[in-house]
Image (tube, rainbow, N blue to C red; front, side, top):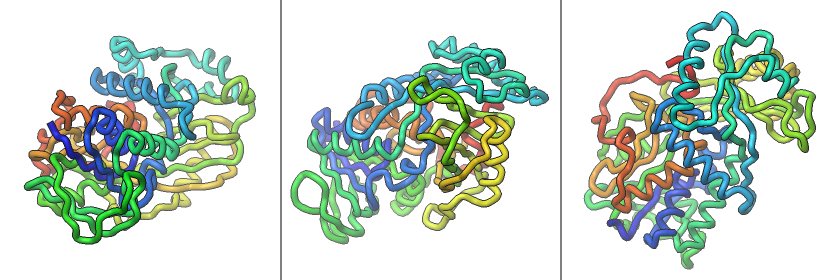
Length: 394
């Protein structure tokens, strides 16, 4: 069992793994080249649900929701219960059939999901347009969070449990034996003292690479290929939302995925957060456009006007990077002796991060991981297409 572990990446999965490892008595050092939650986690949508038709995904998502509920109220982190609705429009039989097929499978795995009549949706959320819906479903074990508040909480909990959190420290990986070499330095948070200087090598029993879109580069530089492609997605926020119930009575609309329109929306303060804008091409994790495209903003404004009647006053539009794998399942577990990976979440990383980080920690400590997510199922030289992560058309 590993006693000294390095975690590379200060996002939601990395900080969760660091906390769970430290809680179980492991000597942990977390390295983050920027600030905690400065990467893709801070650009995530903050939609959390357990509505998965696959039994493994459903189990992982259920545990994630459970943990988010447990952490809610600590620090600045809050889990706001909000139902999740997904729908297909009339004429879109492919997606409509997929929803009809998925919901019974979700229910067979114990998920609180059900098909719902458009009239019922309209009665519960009058601001939601329903006259063009062919089929819709609702999941009740769901909620929304501000993603940027979660990693700082888990990093602080990890520090309190004895972990060392070093920000502003970029590392390169060594595989045989496991270790890291620092590339830059900054005063470390917690644990006393400061980060090691440039070029200083530190050995560990195990290294977990949970660095999001940078994971492929970090592993490649150590001579370890991985079947992973970063890709760009987009989101925006609005200053106002649909009219309807007050915050005290619940949001005017649920978290909603319009599968036919190819976009999602969720309440966000007194407005909305909406997005997708998936680019199905590989992105350079060091050279990509971080602002939302004009075409994306225009398309989202049309989508919001159609689904919730909002003439969107856009306050911000941005992009983030997700990671794809050949089979759209994560790469989570031991890749080489002492080298572990947690990546490839296909746009569902944050919503499952509290469980995925836990599994990563347990695997490092010698417990059984998730066979379907075993990263050694690929050689790393596979050719594959990037497919939108949020889809119901399988």
